[in-house]
Length: 408
Image 1: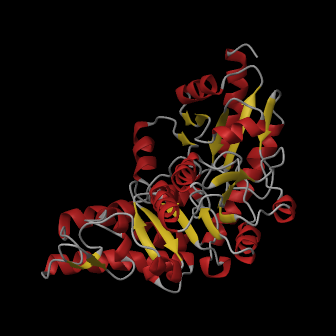
Image 2: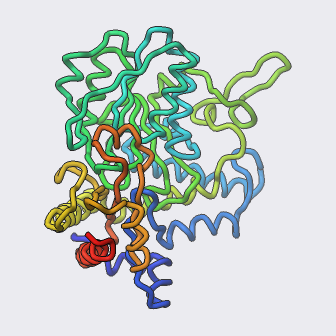
Image 3: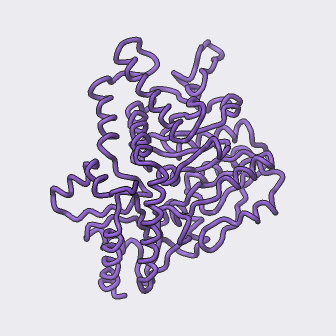
C-alpha cells in the first residue's frame, strides 16, 4: 500500500502544531534528525509517568515493568535489523558513541603498529575521527578508498589494491551528504575474505532501507535513534557474538559486571557487558516504539516512497539554472546536497528559513568529502516519508526567489 503523507502527519505533534498556528512548515532537514510521532513520544512519557524505575536491579513492580519494556525494545530492534540474537544489540548514546566504543576496543586489543585502517573520504566525522584516534593510539595507519566525482566508491580499486596489513574496513551504508547508497555487501564480503573486520555506519540507512544484518554478515553496525523517528541520545551497536565475547569492555562500572573484588572483576553476559551504568531507559523504550512504528509502515514502502520523492526532487532541482547537485541521481536516500553558483549555502538556508522551509547548510560533518567533491560547503534538503511533491515544488520556487534576492 502506498504511503499517504497527509494521513501520516496526523500522528506527528509538530505538524498539528504548525497547522494550528497557520505558519508554513516545510521540514527538509531529516538527515540531521527526523520528527517524532505520537507513539514514540507517548512511549517515553509513559516510562517517566507510569513506571519510572531502574532496570535489571530493583525487584519491585515498577522495576520489573521498566526492565520488561527496556528488553522488549531490544527485541524490537533485533527484529527490525533481522538479528537472530537480541543480545548482540547493545544500547549506546548514538552512532558516534557506538563507533567510538568499537574504535577504542580495537585500538587497545586488536590493532598493532603497521596495521591499516581502511576508510572512505566520504565518511561522517563520527566514522573518521575515532579511527584517527585509534591509529594514533595503536600505531596503525589510515588509508582511503578512491571515490568517483559523484561521491560513489570505486569498488574495483579496493579489491585490486587491497593492503594485506588492512585489519579494519570502516564505511558508511549511505552518505549524509550525497545520499549515495553504497554496496555494503560487497565491502563487507571483501573485508571478510581478507581477514579484516568490517564496521558500518548505518545512521543514514536504517531510516530509509530494509536492513538485514543476518544477510549482510558484517562485524559491527551502528545507528542512532533520532535519525529514524526515535529519541535523541540513544543508539545501537550491533556486533557479532564471537567478537563481543572476545573483546573486553572499555568502560567500567555498575551493571556490566557479575562480581567485583578488590583486585579484579568478572564481566557480565552480553549485552550488559558493554552497557555500564544506568542506561537511557526512556530513550531505549522510545527507540523500540520508533522501530515498531517504522515496521508498521513497512521499510520497503518507505524506501520506495522516499526513492520516488528524491528522484522527483533531483529532476526539479537539476532544471533550476545555476544549481548543481552533489551525488548520484539514483540509488540514493532522500538527502540531496546542492549549490547555486554565486550563492553561499548559509545565505540560501537563511532565506529559505524566512519562508518556512528548513534545510541544512555547511560541510555536514564531512570535510574530507567536501574536498573530494571540490566544494567548500553545500546546501542540503533531505526528504522523508512525511514530505510531499508539493513541498519539492515549493522548495524549487523558493530557490528561484532566493537567486533573485541574492542578485543571481
